[in-house]
Length: 299
Image (cartoon, rainbow, N blue to C red):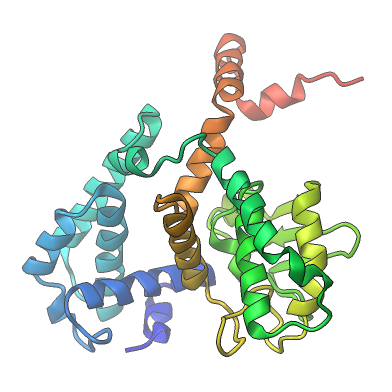
């Protein structure tokens, strides 16, 4: 079974979505005790559905969706998987809209919230600072500085997992990093691309810009053309591996299992007061956030 079979039935899906669905289907098959994704749908059985139903909400939502996408790939009807996906998605939406911290968020919320990532980045920088004066880097040097770079980036810019898809050598494709003195991260292919368009971040934070300035010339020595590389072979670091790296690093260094989704929650929560004020103003004036911006009169 290959990802190509999923792509054939997921005709309206972006490539990034197909990658994510396939990664989750692969993990779901391992949960079912399969060494690889099977050729038939028999493994999407009641016992596996029961295991997914008993998972924490975010995992339940993720793997219920994986089960539905797998069923579509096999061209079979699995109404119980669809029902679970709908229930989990609705519960998740209600929970997020309530603003109440989930059990998982409570367990993994670091002391000082989003600021904890910046402090961690500062500590990690001290450990790799000596590499900034080294002319030639090994794969190990590149990987260790890269781990710092990733934490430094996400301590300021809370993207999804799109950093792993960024290219630094032509042909750039949809997601790229450009610049020397001033860096721009352009994410043209992402989850909400159709609704929101491309994400373009001008790197204004000095520490992130400095990290890129040191790292990128060494990263360009790799042949694959992407920003991030694996430790042993120096191949392109895949999205799921970068996400795992973030979780493993925060678990090891902070004692908290912090993934990209929680990082995004941490950053938004750090701006809770401003967001609440903006929301109240929208209610008072009776218009949207976009219309509110049009009412701003700048000097």
